Length: 253
Image (cartoon, rainbow, N blue to C red; front, side):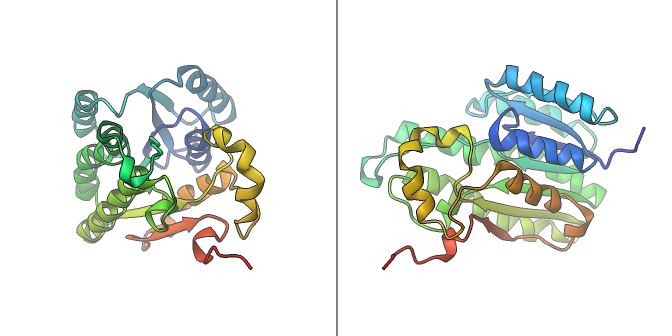
C-alpha cells in the first residue's frame, strides 16, 4: 500500500466539477472525504469507481446540506476533533439568478449561506489544526462573476466576491504557519449546471476567446496543483481559469 499524501475534504463532490476534483485529488495521492446534499447515488458510483482505480486510497462521502446552518455547525464540530487535514476544497455552490433591483432576499441569503457562510464555518474548524501542523492547503472555488459583472448574477456574484475577500485575508493571516489559501475563478464549465442555457451555448462560446467551455478536469487539475508541494509559496492568489473571458473587453467589432 502506498502512503497517502494526507486527507482532503471536498464540499459538493458528488457530481460535475466536484466529482472531477475528487478524482484529481485521489489521483494525486490523497485520501478524500467529500460532502453531498442529494447526489447520493452519484457519490456511491464515484466511490466504487475510485475504489477500483485507486484501491490504496480511502474515499468517503458525508451527507451534508450546507444550507442548513445547524447541520454545518454540527459537522464543523466533528472536524475540529479530527487530526489535521492536508487540504480543504470548497466547491459546493448555489446559484440564484435575478436582476439586481429585483432580488428576493431570502433566496439571496440562501445562496450566501452555501457559497460563503458554510465555508467560513468549516474553514474555521480546519485551519487551526493546519496551523499547528505548520502545513495545509485551502482552495475556494469562486467565479469570474466576482471579478467581472454579469447581468442577472448580482446575488451569486456578491456571495463569490465575499468569498474572495475572506480568502485573501485568511491567506495573509495563515501564511507564516505554512498554510496556503487560494481562490480559483472558473468561467463557464461544461457540466449539467449549464443545461438551462443550452440554447444560448453557441452564442456564449463565441464570446469566450478560447471559443469553448472548460472541461471539469481542467479546473480539477488546477486544484490538484494548488494542493501539491509545488504550490507551497502560492497563497492569496486569484486564479481565473476561463479561456481568456475575464481578460477580454467583451465588446466585439
